[in-house]
Length: 391
Ligand code: TYD
Image 1 (spheres, protein in one colour):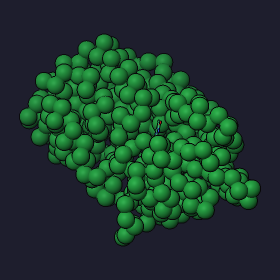
Image 2 (cartoon, helix red, strand yellow):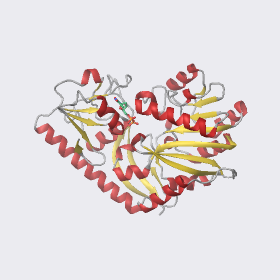
Image 3 (cartoon, protein in one colour):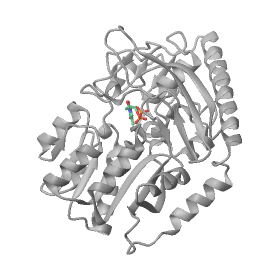
């Protein structure tokens, strides 16, 4: 059997389903399997994208200094190195990346209406649609082909990758490049960061798996680099297979070698990962219950989508974490999906009688710990990555 299940995280609500009023909450079963032929992991029960990516989507890419800086540096790098005459971004969110490009030669595709409106208002033609082959044909007709196609934290959201990559091939100029960034499967396995698995991530990519998939669509990876964002991501640089001008870089070979050496292509590694996930749950509940018994007040810092997976898998409710603080205005005044832990603003929640803060947004540890130095002076941070501990 090429496809085998290795992880079951049980009944889960929508990871970004923060609610002002609890009603009609949707639950599904979150489990993943390993495809030993393609070397990919895939969610077993994929939800229709329109349920998650709608006009009320709450995640803002510009919400942290880390991501604002990240996309600025990326845009400058691509502009200087590849000098594209035209740019297309798939999943442009609030425009954090495209704002660094010329409005006349840059367009965007964004299925969430609230964000498509923002970038349209900024002056970038934005198609308020899901990325499909049909749309790619329309775009070529209206704008011609593109020299740079960029997509960050979006391709791993799309269930039908065959259609996605065919559409990319359709719209990419012959000498153009397609660059995409998504969380790294290898880094997730090494860090036991299972909270990166939720409804919006039907896939977690290895470079080996992507290489296999892209080959079937006339596309080839020519370079890969590791990024620290989103808990460890890969930036994948792709060209048309017919383009002989661009040569394969050492980054690709290094990644493939590293993945293989560290067991990413072996089912056994996934079984070990699932055991570590169980251990992580056991340890997190042990620490939280000990803190509760000693009357310590624990809150969560960051109402990240990732916390939904943890809280629902571990059964963590308000009796263990009193509330979550988050700087996203749309999340403040809501309760968390499934466990219904209230979300408040940092101004309201970061008060004197807090003892411990669970780092839900652990991928921003550096930014958050630096920012909260004064407030956190006599308090502790609690994290579960790569293992449960107070820092
Ligand atoms: P993030 O880890 O980016 O992603 P996901 O939702 O995909 O798991 O979410 C981080 C959350 O933390 C986001 O809601 C914003 C919030 N946050 C703060 O409240 N304060 C901060 O200083 C930072 C960096 C993030």
